[in-house]
Image (cartoon, rainbow, N blue to C red; front, side, top):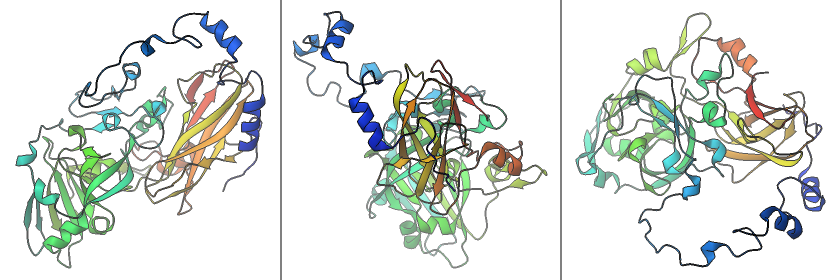
Length: 426
């Protein structure tokens, strides 16, 4: 459990605010007017001058009809992997280091496709529910939307998130290392509601979910999960699903690995056994050191990452900073996040930003005074089951180095004396 020692540079919040507001020369604080004038060289749009955009009328409403980010934010985008031979069976990463709060904007939710993004007409899309049910059914989109609507904020993580980091540090930024992660408010109907409408037979234990993409992506889902908190969704963050997220219908299984949350959902077949598809016999399995493979490793264990400061950032000068990051667990709520600035020798408990919701991203932060020396920044998450995020070596000791998926080890960012920050293993 956490060893709550305050190491050099880690300070209490009250001390942080007192020093930040009272000290002279503290990093990232507004400059006194005299210094601001000198910095602006007395001209341009900088204070105290009146900026040019105040002197003319702005753009009218509906410019454009569907709002877009400022042109000055055009660098905040998803980035592709370079590990796949095609772009139709590939993935892209969410820019976690550029986001604020815990909700991922729809245009920045990471992608993982197995056969490209289909262009589906919702008027011609239906969901078939059959197999071990009393009344096989086919729902069109209008019928799906007549069922009681529910919304849940839940994280979505690819089981391959951080997959390149098993043997050596490879990613430069947190987008590279942890960007197969997003969090949205998902809206739709509970899968249990649809199953009750069809009447599931007593011996039914599994459901095959199938997508309408070119890969016909399929996974077997335990009935227990289907009846617990599974959703069949048609909206994310208040708007219709984006095409790359499964428009017009997808499955959401809170806390489960992303590949099970079938996009472009077209078929649910109920059975008394798993279907042993290609995805669950050879692809999404975990090869262990003795040559055996783990199957149906659905749950994403507790994990966290510091997003500021993180790889690719540079601290401009000594002084006060706020260490910020995200934590999540597929087993429920995050109850604690500890932060270390010395590579795990000492830990300080960070503040969690509420409300903390189960199986959703939780933001954490900790004031920190950087003295200009070498530092190793780490975070470790603890969830409500008592599970503690492991070190990389502890994970390797159990799983070996043949595995690809479910790497939830503690991430380390190294701060050099020049303020540069890089991805390292310790």
